[in-house]
Image 1: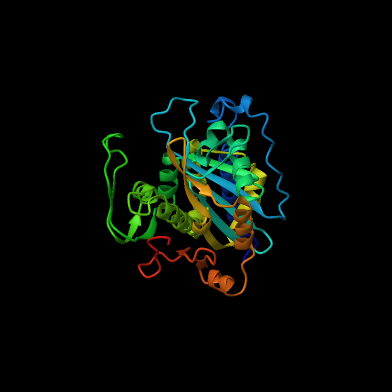
Image 2: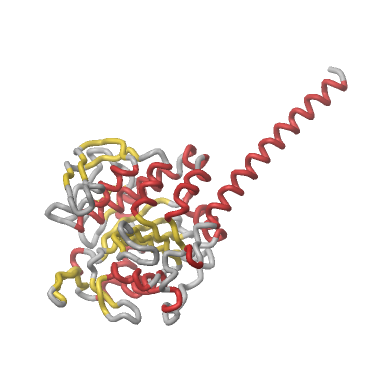
Length: 354
């Protein structure tokens, strides 16, 4: 081999490494730019009109990266609202991750739960967000007895974009679901058939919104937890990771959060290596009591101290329950319900909570 040939080979190899380095740099810069824009400020923030009136509510606690982190996820129906108007949250979930045990937990909060809203008396918990994200985080924190460090806020369109961006999700729909409404010009009608199928953003939204059956919001919150778990698993796939910059770009206009870029990197690292351990409804059935407040039906908590104890018991489950969650199934020892975390096959699906 001549010296010229050796040089050509060396420079070819160097060129390949430079090209790879450039692609990697572009990939991470693209991700950084999109993630950095998730945190909206000024008039770009959906909470622009409440930022000046939320000063009485304490700032969320700081996360150091080694203790449990709790994130409030809120989905809203922003159709027909003017700029600056904040709708009540249609969906409220808390994602909790323990960076030490690498266990994740998902709590769905019934939106009609009647509780204290900081500086605004008592009301349904889904009204808390109308007073700003700090108020919503503090209300949920006080209800569950755990610190809420972060929030992520999106509307229906953001959910659709997320599911479409990951290529949809293969999922088992446990029964036929049919609902029509003239009020919204049939834009959000629901028409799903029972069976294992591929759900895109639009059909996925139909699935997680459906509550027109005997158990209403009880089964809807379970469906939401199961489907979001499936989306999280899909996000871990190699294909989704490679498409991450474009996924984030499509979601960007519909997301607001107090997460910094640094926080997101830490969470992404922990979340990727963590396993969903439990999926629960709040309040659990045995602590839930129906009430009539001012002529409206709401859901009360039988004993708020017992609810806080229940949340800690979920975190501390060991033995048989832990073994079951390791195999992908979460078991609630308190309410006796079995929720499928990752198995969406016909045999693994659950159609209702008891």
